[in-house]
Length: 429
Image (tube, rainbow, N blue to C red; front, side, top):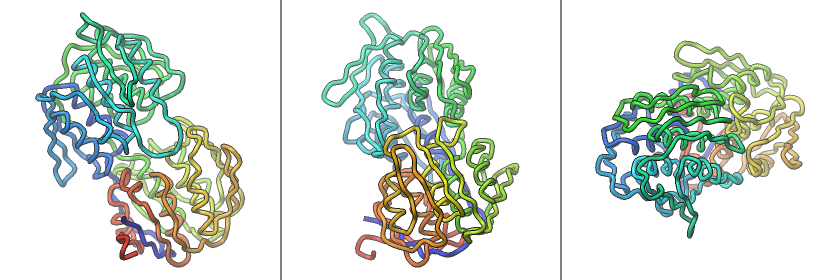
């Protein structure tokens, strides 16, 4: 099993290219299921979750070719098996995104209940209720969602869908299903993330009629057929935020090419308050930091919330900055109930963190010390890498397969900025 060996204490300087967003690429790969014409996606990141999704659609009969330059060409014209089996989706939450497109185009689907990171409950009941409102008949049986249209119907019907909670994947599923539904669909309490805007723009290129994406009220006029398109995946704001936190913690200066500053307002505001300089430029974001000297960074309290608030996917990475910053801070997690699993591993490095329920109280320390730590989920693994870049001595991060699910060659990009980091096998470690 691969691990990351980090020798801390180096500033990060230079330029890093931000990859396409995982959370946009995955639903957009599923959107290709909505048409029998070719779809070309550019800027697709090289991630384990993307590889898993490609295996999934190929298993359905989709032609999917992937280039080294980040281009994926898909053709679902011969799709003959609208099923997402457990064996292919057990490690990936986003598999539920196949349900809406398959049901909308073929009138039936069989999709396994999804897996993914163990960071808390992410129920599919919102997906089921929304698609039922559009006329689908759905039952859960032996770990599978079995969905079909009622006898005599050939299309889903438009509906008003008001979810009990803001759900990103739910909004994406409803967007894709409604694009081929009969009549108008109104999504209320819709998620507003940039990845949803990007998906909507791709669907519009395919012939969908969508208004209001990027707000909490999205209106979709269903069409009978969608056509192929060419689309570039938006830059990954979470990868960009992770590199911003890494530079902030280690000190130095870096330019994040293709990063979208307007997608990271909450994170950038906190970094500036912590003492960093952040400039949003035409084709990226530039950050400068005097860290990691204790007096150079000021700890920041924050609470995670839905976009455009502080993202839960950045909570662990910013905590890695707080643990070596001056002062005390409170980090409140409101999205997932089990997203402080990185805390115990950071304590092994010398961090001072106390958790009470949804709140982590952090007291900054002047120095972290290298140790062996274990990644427990995707973003936790990124936070441990940041902590290891700052810690004195060697840090060994185990179970980095979590990291590979959401970061495109992270250690290579960090080396390009001057980090002393390498991937090692279990035997070498």
